[in-house]
Amino acid sequence: MSLAPVCSISTYYEDEPNQSFNFDSLVIKPFLHNKHTYLQHNLQPLSDNHIEKYEARTSIIQHYNLDGIDIDYEHFKADPETFAECIGQLISTLKNNGVIQFASIAPFADDDVQSHYLALWRKYGHIIDYVNFQFYAYDQGTTVSQFLNYFDKQASNYDSGKVLVSFISDGSGGLSPENGFFTACSKLKSEGKLNGIFIWSADDSKANGFQYEKQSQAMLSIAH
Image 1 (cartoon, rainbow, N blue to C red):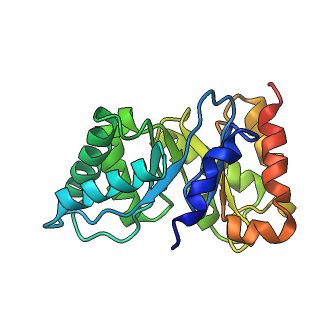
Image 2: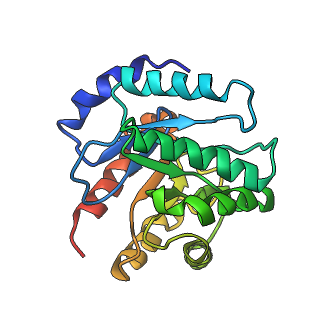
């Protein structure tokens, strides 16, 4: 994946201050007062060159003027406790050293995935700012009522004030905008539960002129 497009993100923020990027995906969050740029991170736990990887990530983050990372680790070579400690220490060190200001995680409804992320959450949830839960990993054709139930379940697993809703641009899973995603968002917003919207991915959204990103932006910009 090319890192070159990241160079233009800082300029983009002048016009769109409450959008956040992690290369492939777009996260839109309400009421942000600072610029947030995310680097998706896939650190291998138990790696012999853990320090070198940390230094490499730090170099990339600083070179491209990023201020956050999104942990999207889906295949595990370590037990949940080891994963939690490795990733938790990474986030903590990056924050303590002033390398990043924000960190998010991107779990989805899979027993193995959840066991690892929940172990991370239990020990280091206090330094994780957002949960970009992959609701689009649920079955295609998810209904509004099912989606709302899924949200409530994950909000009980993680801090309900940090869980973002999500959809996939190509409509291949979960609740799509065509089938009521924004209806579900309106319901959550009326209940004070809409913390932000995570959209995967910008590559697919580009074909329709980022229609749903703009709709998400408009919804989040309106006060309750």
